[in-house]
Length: 357
Length: 279
Image (cartoon, rainbow over all chains, first blue to last red; front, side, top):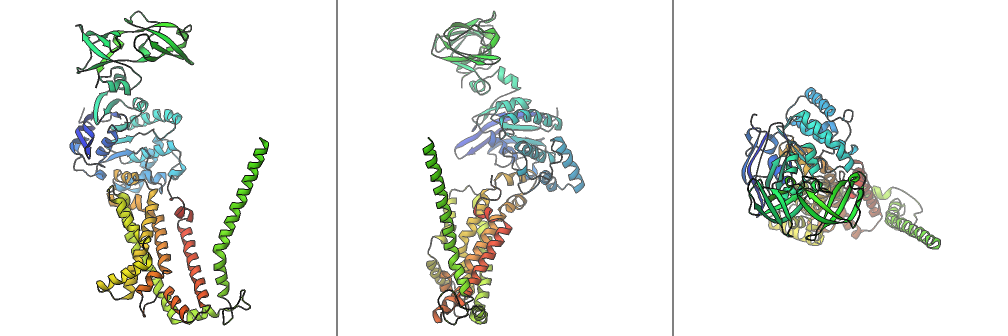
């Protein structure tokens, strides 16, 4: 692979005494789509604005397509941005919006019109070029914004919560469409979002951000199945969390003793930390237990919620005072009802000991 | 159930009737005096007689156009209003852009400073400006007038531009910059066209305000440079006749023309109501 499409090296940005971005590092391959995922206030939007050049970097380096952009003003960076509210020019038509960047870069008229037509076809808006943004739906506006950003053949594409302004149903269909468009264009892309479904559904890799730092990078599945920190375990997907301590027993195995005195056979943590916790995905808990489920928990079913293909069992653990919600297939647990005593089973491989920080 | 429904329907009707009544009363209250002075301006009688006039003529308009102090006053006022409006719009709009853009903490304070001439009695502004002008050795009445009128109209141009900018998202100029436009280009392409409505509204308001201003002008005019309103006040003191009604009608027509232009250019709704591109 040639030089990465985007490289962040220990970037830092302070607002007053508050460090919004506190030494974040990330490398995005050329042509790759990476989602910067984190809760609001984690520094992801500041990171986007630093890359775009709207904020001045306090420390670190930003390299776009092999070029350190520290001294490049934002209008010479060739970075396409799709803003969260799209920021379409309301006094221009869709076509004028798309051609604006090409005009700034000195494209001739025939070239502009040809490229505009290609882009409108790409985002499937042919025939709407003379509409003003106000006359377009939210999804159409988003695609005009995407076409406008792509029109300058950017070295890097930044998307700020691209689907967050759309209603749930539209989000679903546009997610797939957006992924297809981005893949076919092949531009290095960074998506900034707090929505894990948006990140998982579009990106090749996810960079998880928390408190101004990037805490874990990996394929969506990897982050879901092998979180390395409490934050990763709880921010992406659902997770049962037990505080406690881990005891090695050699051979990459060990025992986790939770604060309420529950014992779990587990594998060793992948990263070393001063404190550990235990994370279990609810779907890995089996009722009734299967053969490989060495860990058993006694519980009482408090309520059964019927969701069609699934049931949600709300179980209170006998030890400690906590209620957990376990999804099970409706046809497997047909006889279970409220008040029943059940055994919950979970395999050691699904009990993940991760850093508690 | 039905009786309360009936009562509430009756209540709605009563409220609707009251609202309509108030609306009509207000319109009449605003329009009748102007209409009366308009009718009186065509009165043929020598003296100010009982309403309505018994015969009509254009004599008061003739006397208006034949009176050199009115005519020179009219031209002074037009020149003054035009110049003050231009200066006030350039300065005011510039200040508003800077204020809207800045993240500076003293922003609120500076904004109040720009708006303060509205809260200071115009008599005080007129007198202060006279003292200030002579302190810096400006004795030309027209220059003094321009200075005074710029001060009193600036709050309106600042306000109107700021109001026009409320609907313009900051993201627009950033979008233009990301697409390759240098900041000045982004301002011209993405900010200015959207603030245009507010700027024009402010300019017209400044013109109208300056054109019929009395209190500040009284201090700043001299025997040779009089604005139309000042000439009118002076004439009224000397010999009261219906020329005043004729002039008042001319004023009203100019004001209506300005409103018509405002409506044509930007849509009154956009100016007094919401910003043009606000969502």
